[in-house]
Length: 247
Image (tube, rainbow, N blue to C red; front, side, top):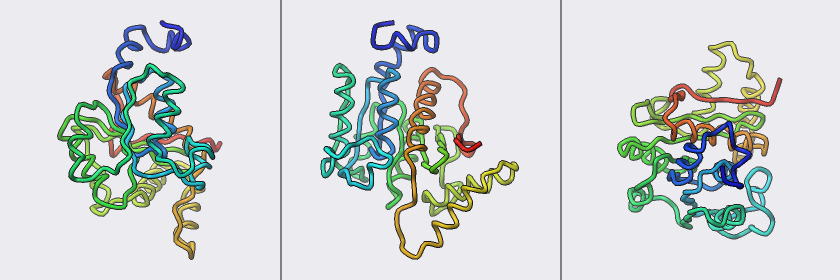
């Protein structure tokens, strides 16, 4: 393996390392997507498209891959700059607008896997999944659960998030995960307590999230990108991945 990736040896074959180098990935949403994008790039995925119309805010710095120098700049642009500093030869593109019904088809075109880290403020995230399924593109949905991280994988032949709820959002997904874990006697009582406390807050704020889960998600998603790209077996939604640092 070349110098940049020589420490990846044994974990990946030379053929796999060369193959993923040009494998086209779409990062839709550069909040939690910023952590995933860097981990994927360092692993060897060098063909990345970054999309986000948001700018970096101070509240992002507790968990997203940005610094004080990035405040008020477009997330996708600053993430592009950071990734190019890591690997200037990587084929990275960025878009500083939001995904909508007019541009979504053009933006997902020619990609093999997408990370859907879009805010559920409209029907776009669900339409994104639907269109990706039609175009034979697998989609990763990452969820920051503070001390834990979860990822759902939507494939062309899997169920989609609307099977959980016709009016799906991140809160519905967390409820779904908690219910499933309880049915399997998995001890995630702390997560249910966090959810209950968040719901009962008088002031309606964005959900609490930690840097811990953001970096776990970088690892989980990068492994899934590798497994999907090399056509290995994965869990498909409604199954999902979850990892916690709590013992």
